[in-house]
Length: 385
Image 1: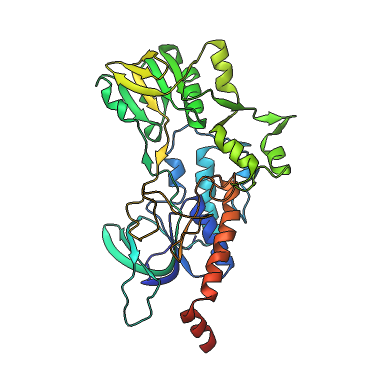
Image 2: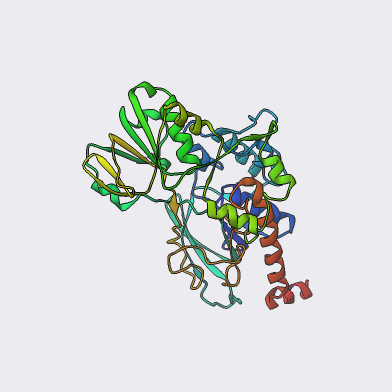
């Protein structure tokens, strides 16, 4: 990768976030010849994956877990591990000379103040790098930090006794993180199913009674169809990249998170994993209270309840909704020059997985190129060159 030792004072595009979305965006901007820089707060490319739980395996096969320009290496598992993805992203950044500045935390993005130069429409991006502050101006900004910044834990969690161990999935690494006894895994998505399965079958399982509490009946999707990964027919019939507003996408969205694989379902049938399908609405002492009136006694709770959008560094009027989430149409903000990438359902069903990043990166790059064509300052510069 083109490691950035000194951050310039001005650049065409700043990408905030050096995960897969930021790398995919950088690839297409480079292809279009647009000068840019990626600001990333991690020590190394791929660290966002290294920080996740030890046994994490992608539920997408490696053919659908690659970015544009580089497949995963042949030695990667059919369903890559977190470390394989982390190493792949690091190598991807090197192979494509991604201009990334590590250990760089963006603290504020706002409109740039006009100066002697024409800064109309520019943004001022303030950052801290190795505890040293700085500012870079850019014509455009792409937020690629994703929607998973702030762990969401229900307020009712505060009602549990202090003796009950509690952890959000983002802070979970191995089964030893939780004590023996009655474990509740709260959530109805892939993370909840994977972690409930690990706790029910992994090291120390004999000392635990594990119950998965899902808000609705889990939607288990077979991992394979006719011996092939389910992703192949989804891709073949155009479902995987169907527009977010299509009927099939809206139906899938309305069903909620599908759980790829049926291992957890089999454990439930065999009695190795408990399952309650009701929302957690309260907590008192050592018990969770469910909407259906049940009480589930617990010694520990693993909250697989997702994340909420959190962009405190965005101080651009009109860029965020009243709830602090991204305001956009297919990743394009109503604020000229401001963009988003890597969001669930951004434009397609697969926008939030590695496979879908490139389609959105292409669209946003085209939008940035079009905007440059209507920029008087750039037009004048081009005429004079």
